[in-house]
Image 1 (cartoon, rainbow, N blue to C red):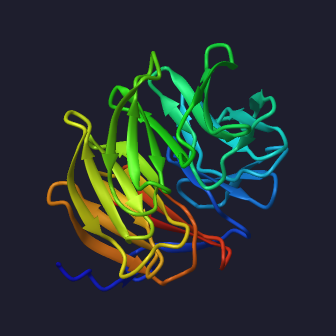
Image 2: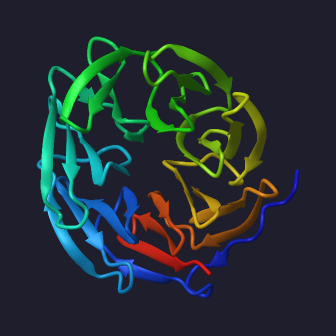
Length: 297
């Protein structure tokens, strides 16, 4: 196994540390970073200064990763019952609050926005994925899924779901919801992202990231990103790279051209989230109330 690069201090690499008390989930929209804080607040951090430029009440705790799409930021709120909140990322206005009757949002997963719909994994009498039409802001279907399913993402012509209990990624048809493939990835497969022509799955127990080819539904390779298991974790694609939020450092940078970790940044700062675009990678560390921003060349 190729040794992991020693972490470079993110400040020495040109990054900055922004004090944001309780910062957790991150999502970049139009260059600005949105992060959830406390029990019912989402903040927008300015792309240039990193200062707070909007503060929005979500009317409940956000307990799973956000997504963007259809001109909106989508957040799943873990109230009882749950709800999907749609925000205008420019004005910060709540555009819709879509109730999920009799259902609770699955914690520590992700919302999926893409392929014409928005999707969120829910709990109830059975594990389901709720399908929302963004043109009407209404629930149009409930899809029963395997009991271990935790997170959803959409792209490359499919709905993708991770199952950390079974260590697999599943592919479902967007129109019919039919199961099209079950792909073994690794132990604790949970957070993931679709981008750069692949599906990237973080396997928390293994401390690895698996690359899946959506054209063949097969594993291309599995890449070690941490010296041990990842506690919490997160994954993002941006700036031409894949970014894994890890535990023995802040983040690992994967080059998709070589499928290798080409850099890691520290300091080790507990758990949090990661988001990236062409301009910067943002990493939260809620244990120490910081959001790190590293500009990309």
